[in-house]
Structure formats: structure tokens, C-alpha cells
Amino acid sequence: MSRYTRAFTPGGTFFFTVNLADRSQSLLTENIDELRASLRRVRERHPFHIDAIVILPDHLHSVWTLPPGDTNYPTRWALIKAGFSRTLPRDERIASSRIAKGERGIWQRRYWEHQIRNEDDYARHVDYIHYNPVKHGYAKSPKDWPHSSLHRYIRNGILPADWGTSYAKDSHVGWGELANPNKP
Image (cartoon, rainbow, N blue to C red; front, side, top):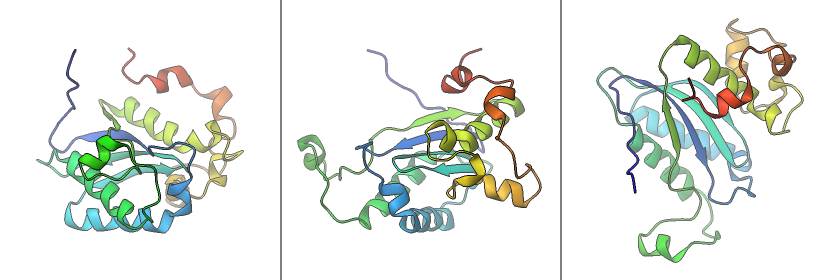
């Protein structure tokens, strides 16, 4: 059995997908203020830049850039997840393997990480993040979803307010490519 090795590049930029353990729950959007507070607390102690983010009911996607010389995104994710979990009542189902380790049952243990390789890779992942609420049927247009960095991109003039309304049919990037960013 091969052992998964995470990419660690000092000051790197990474795409993440982080999921709830129970994907039928809506804890992230129902407790959005607590999640934002957890992110804010971790960023104060362990700075990083959130280039793009979308928070959906059961998972989130984000692109982060770490400070020069820093590779420690695993600690940041552990602190964010733990900080958020502490704000929730202890009423989730917890597997015996988690109980033995003193863990809660809020989050999936692992998360997906992908090191951004170049400007095109960066743009594809940021687009994927911003279009994700439409992909999952939570919004008809990306701008209709409130928990997205798309609003910052629009406010700063980086993207137009109608971005993504024809994205699916006009994009040069297909969803299959985005689902597997390692595909050449």
C-alpha cells in the first residue's frame, strides 16, 4: 500500500477541499459566524492569505498562499477544524476509532490539497471555487451565493458582477479537468 505524501513548498499556494464527516449536514453555513471566527483566530496566530474561498453547507474549497518560508498548512487546518468544532454541541455520532483518539465526529479526517503550479492552474482553481455553488445547485448564479470570495473579486474590480452566468458553456476548462487538476 502506498503512503500519501503531501506537498510542502515554503510560501506555496495550495487548493484545498475540506469536508464534514456527515455530508448530509449543513453545519458550515448554519454556523458560518463560528467558522469565520475560527479562520480569523488561526490567521492571527499563523498568518496566511486566503486567495479564494467558498463555504457550502457540507464542505468548503479554498486557495491559500503561505508566508515565505512557511509550509505548515496542516497545523492551520487542524486548528481551524478544532476551533470550529469546539463551538458546536456534542451531539454528533462519533465512531469508536475517533472516541479512542479523543476526536469529534464533525470533519472528515483528511482533506484534499493540491499545490498550485502556475497562473493557469491558479485561475482554474479560483474559477472552480467561485462556480461551485452553482455546480452543486445552491445558486443559479455564482454571485447569488453569499459565502464566497467572489464578492471580494467583484468589489475589487477583478471580475464583473455577472461573472459565471455563462461560465459552464463558455469556459475553456471542462469540469472533468477541474475535478482532476493533476491531469495533463
